[in-house]
Amino acid sequence: MEAELGDIAATTAANQEAPPALVTVAKGMGDLDDLVRLLAKGLSRAKPWQLHLAAHLAEADRLMQVLRLTVALDRSHTEIVEAAVDLHLACRRARQSLAGTRADRTTVAAMQLSADLAASIVHALQRFTSTR
Image (cartoon, rainbow, N blue to C red; front, side, top):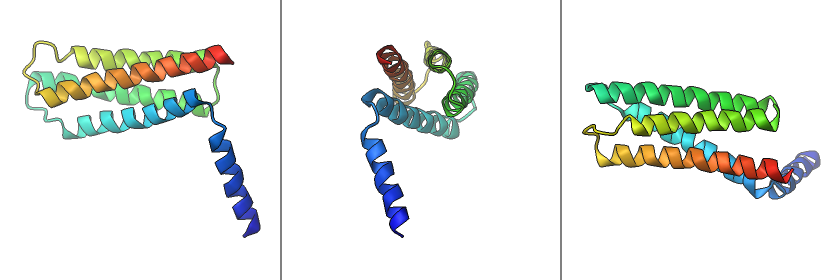
């Protein structure tokens, strides 16, 4: 029991020492992952723009998995940043695919948020990389 409490305390201390940039990245990745999956799940596929958006969201979801694996496999910082940039570009393409469509404001706002979250992940990773 005492060993378990020591492990929990060590984990808590380690979490408190995490650089702010990494905390931003972790929160952003979780939020972006939730947003992309919920958008894809709730999206009707009755209209052409919805089909296109669903394909873009599937690509963003795939790239999110690539980013997670890149981090989990402890790859180089440049590879991690490249994976984040690819994810950001996919989110921007998804947002731009809505231009000229009759997408509702909520969907457009959610896609703007996804692009902004991906950009914040890239910037936080670049800040972290530049400080190391």
